[in-house]
Length: 121
Image (cartoon, rainbow, N blue to C red; front, side, top):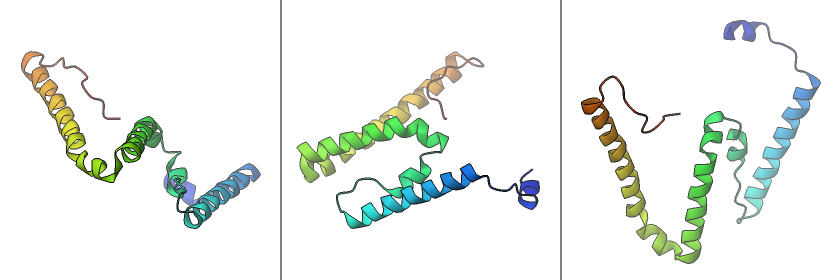
């Protein structure tokens, strides 16, 4: 299927050409703003990757993490942000251990049934 699409490409429609130009203009504007202003928070790569389904699934989590980081830097400063690293690493390790413990409980007490503890999207 991919080989036939490469060998026999469809011509680009006018709407697709305009959308391509609009996307190129948007990325160019984001690049210009990023290199012109130090305070500009948006990266053009984020715009390019925003159409991927896994990024859309994780967008709320990424936004929450960014807001927590922003609040920590604003109210606690850089030293507080650096000192809080072990806490967040411990949260991740604790979550992984809890998922693993749920897996072990399912294997021992609920063989061939199982429960959904964590979904890998």
